[in-house]
Length: 113
Image (cartoon, one colour):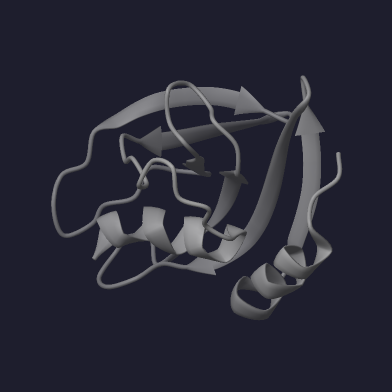
């Protein structure tokens, strides 16, 4: 797994602790205790970013637990990755764009605003 170091440094600056992992050849970035936007409940949670195409999405952002936001979300993924259970809602980032890792996370978190 060869992820851009500058983008991982950028993630750390914005979100704190970041750990890279790989499962079945797919890269993931674990972000611990990320504070969620707005009035989300819980207000912080571990996130797992898959910065490549995954299950029909350009990128995926998995949550350690389901989050309540300002509107209902379609929580359509319940998966086990890197020895942990994760959930994700249906949210597509713009196709064909070259977002940096931090921009990917922010694009997914827009659904919670």
